Amino acid sequence: MLYVDALAQRRSASQNVASLVNIRVTASMEVFETDGICTVGLHPWDVTQDWRDALDIVEELASEELVLGIGECGLDRQCNASWIHQIDAFEYAADLAERVSKPLMVHCLKAHDELLRVHKFIDPLQPWILHGFVKGADLARQFLDTGMTLSFGSAVLKESASLVEAIRICPSERILLETDSPDVLIEDIYAAVAAIRGVSIDELCEALQKTFEKTFIRDQLS
Ligand SMILES: [Zn+2]
Image 1 (cartoon, protein in one colour):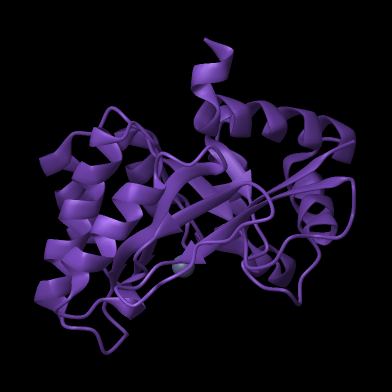
Image 2: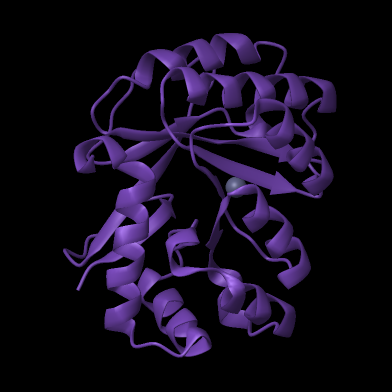
């Protein structure tokens, strides 16, 4: 049984866990190191007026074999980074993901309308994964309708009724799970989501491994 953690801040020591580790690139990054599969991106919290330099580094790293995706990139209305720079950087990053043919891991906080606008504007061929989804079924449906995949994290452990509904309506090929924190076990998130979806943990692991491979490792499969 393999638990795929679609957004990890640290690689799990367990052999039963495949962690896609998120690496935050900034313009001052000098050394790139990874001990396994990862995504590289300019997090909205890290956006400064030098955002283009950071994304040039991201573009260079995109050809590394272990880099499976671009991100986290996105929009966050609750952070201090300039909103205008965030939008410019996110549009550029989304276009970059198209150029390098890699999926985009999206961070979005209080900016869902703007995210939908950028998605429509870019009209991507690459998959977009909206990570850390904590909203209800209505918003989930809007994103699923655009073709995005939703990734759920530790919020599933809190048993919010609206989030449960969102988890239930995701088709299995468009849902992923993540820890996004060293303090959470991916096994606990799988157990909660398996119960919500009325499947065994085994079945969920198998389904999400397929989703992960289809989303991130498409070249090898086709
Ligand atoms: Zn995030």
